[in-house]
Image 1 (spheres, rainbow, N blue to C red):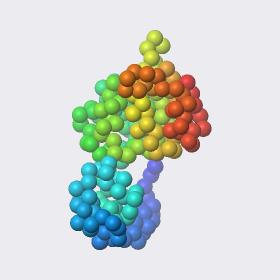
Image 2: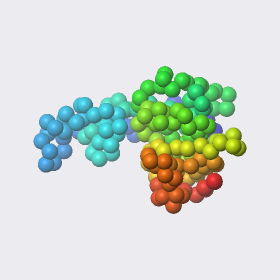
Image 3: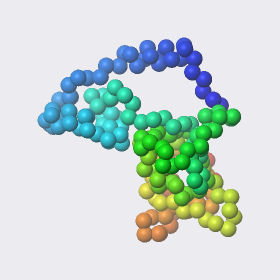
Length: 191
């Protein structure tokens, strides 16, 4: 279902966000204030997001990531952004910026570009993670680090692994029990 922004919704959001005040001075802490100011000024996107979660002093005037979409699909050579039923955008991995944010549903049709795509993501808040493997003779593999990043929000409700296995850096297969530790909100698991 596509989300439609109306002027009333935008006005409501503006009213909520206009009441948020960003502190001009660092909070009282054991760190010297010049270090906190340096951290705020020079943090890369992923660090800035973590800092913003810790204290509202680190909130930036401009959002540190680009919202890429609610339904994203990773294919062999393209990243598909599905905005609505008729509006699908295709992007080459090299054309994407390095500060993406995705949420909702993420379909992985081919794992070849997964590590590259993850390196371009700042925030991932998925509720549905689906690995699509149409080749019955081939078993897909992803790294344990990639899996942990994709489930880092802890809000994943549906996981569809199909014929995909998760492996450690040395090639050892990670058991399902370990994968379930990263998905506390999981309601549906399909193997």
